[in-house]
Length: 261
Ligand code: CAA
Image 1 (spheres, rainbow, N blue to C red):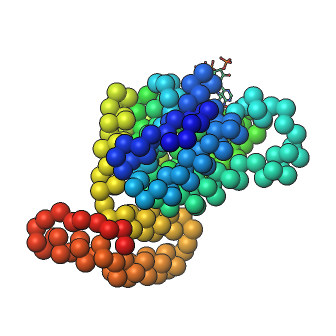
Image 2: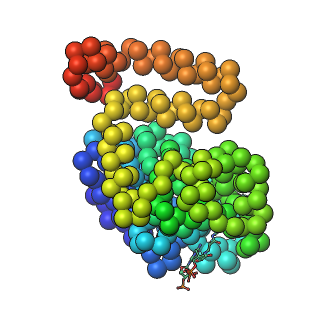
């Protein structure tokens, strides 16, 4: 496994665990973190033995407290614009990562931290997790998808309130609002995230990618387009060896053995 400066990666069976590892700055998302995450997610996507990933933060306090404010403080606006700052998160972590991944949020997920968690296929949060888009207090606004993904996740009223006041939402409210799939005690977070990731990793891999693609399409398409897209992908899956195996295994009352084709 490559050695990184700001993240840790490990393979646990078919599950890749990626840990943001700058606890002294609450795992703030610097440019180096971005580059290393892009590389780690690309390695996960490219490795056929890896079928689900979990992203978490080191320490008990933060998943990530946002983009690195110290790095941004003196950066001229022209650099943000000319470099199309923050554009590579979505293209690499969301679009190019076609395999499933889970965010295990273990504390603060603020600004870019909340936005990074929302790039995951779903979030499992510890009971001490706190979500927020406090960028307004810095004289800016979300820049990695907060105004869009948070609004789609929890609706306009709550998303607007959070963006305009910068207030944090605790884990219970986040679960109630549909932002997180499940909340668990902090001590159980990684075990629960790993158990869930292992369940996904045990599924037919191509079907897992297609299910992910279908659900994500609901954010991009009209209902008619989405339903057509879903039907076509379903029809394509019926041609796979894993479909034949899955249905035979059901009828023969045994577990399926997947080929990913
Ligand atoms: N960037 C850089 N450093 C950060 C940071 C960030 N986003 N968040 C925390 N840190 C650093 C602090 O500066 C501090 O470092 P020092 O010890 O060197 O002073 C260290 O992490 C510990 O933080 P605190 O002492 O502040 O810890 P706390 O428990 O008192 O407060 C907190 C915790 C409420 C999360 C507070 O750290 C905080 O408000 N952080 C900033 C949150 C924020 O505004 N995030 C949005 C960033 S902008 C963004 O993300 C843009 C975008 O849309 C992509």
